[in-house]
Amino acid sequence: MSTALITGASSGIGEDIARELAARGLNLILVARRQDRLDALASALHREHGVTATSIACDLSDRDALNGLFDQVDAALASTGSTLTVLVNNAGTGFWAPFADQDLAGVQRDIDLNVTALTTLSHGFLRRARAHGQRSYLMNVASLAGILPTPRYAAYSGTKGYVRFFSEVLDYELRDSAISVTAACPGGVLTPFLDSAGQNVKKQTGIMTSPEVARLCVNAMYRGKVVYVPGLLNKFAVYTNLLPRRLRGWLLERSMLVSVEARPDASR
Image (cartoon, rainbow, N blue to C red):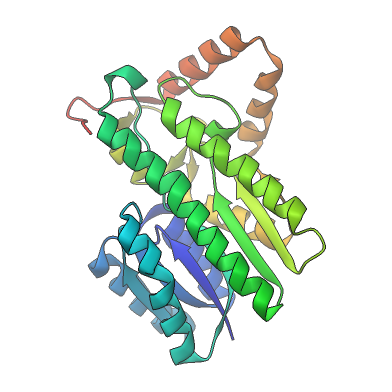
């Protein structure tokens, strides 16, 4: 039996990817900070699809908790006699504001979660996938902001750019193995991430729904896509990289301001 490990699984894209994979018959190990939400999701997926879903509460920005996570994962796999064949590194955070106005501790947490945790878990997963030799898939959830450097998202864009390039290199290094790596690069998505990033939605122009993005990204993962941008409008936006840098930055900032505004009560 195959098992998928999904981080950031308590809401948004992570939750909907869990639903997609459960519908395909995979057992699940769900990781996020909120135990109650994970337990509720695990129970629902077991009830609806008959899969085994294990919930592990873990703050991945905490180095000690991160380093101990695979001990819990291995124990869960041993208890079900299952093999870890999918890792979805979905957990991530960011804040929408000029970089110099942001709290540095919050920026460091973004880096710890978006880069350090993702890198650590990818390493642990790939070691295990090479050892068992079964067809395996690693999906790292990056962002369109990792392709298009987005004003007011300096640290977020930087970390997601890392995720994109990291994933491309891994896929090349693993080209002769049974493991494929996908960098999923969604644009705006209606999830709780917008609230935590300090944004209110004004217009839903170009903003996709989480279930739609999850379905498209899981399909792309199984097709072996290396860099995948869901949504026609987002695919078209990639071509703004051909524009002069200052013009591209202006267009990206203006287009975002059409859809969102800063929440008055937002803070790090």
